[in-house]
Length: 257
Image (cartoon, rainbow, N blue to C red; front, side):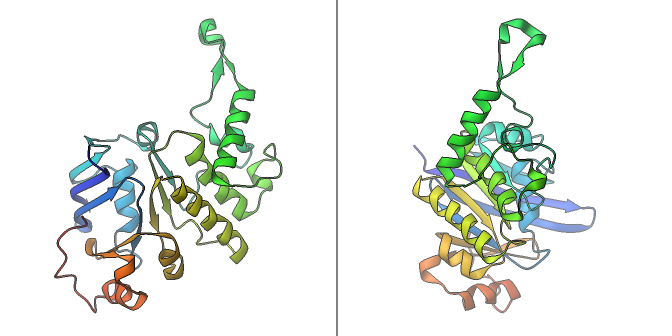
């Protein structure tokens, strides 16, 4: 059985004449945590959007859990087992924690009543609490609406969705970009918990210290292309910056495997 959970081959996205992503070959193994780094506009978020079905790729192949996939949207990706924390979080401010975690996939009971099924509030609350425990997220009152929570708590709620459901892969796009030091530490502890539990993760980040603290491998994008595939133990921040800025060209790169 293959240990690869996600693989892309020749993944490409063009916006008219703009080549935002070009021939991205990428491999992620079960339980591995990989960082994606690069300057603004390097193709990092574009890459994530193609994997999760937010956008439709121009060409290329995505294999998830050894099956070729063509997600029509993020909901398809979620149902397949890919949970994504986008920069925008995609939370409903007027809803509480369980309602946000189950938004679009609510639990119901008395299904035999046909169209008159009832929402299973207790089931959603219990599963929410279990998800929070699994990730180590601490929310004092899950009945509070998202609007009444801090930025860090909001981010943690978004991350907790990955544990509430049977996710096979978690993708985090700049999860701590707008957070303070204490809130950032809380999110990073969640990432460490996911690692301990053997969950695969892709982390998009500009934070060099964070990347070297949390991941196994670093993929560098530049001008829409993958230019480096670096084991954390065999590189340093200066080397990564050299690839990001183009001081190193990535000519020796032979694929992110």
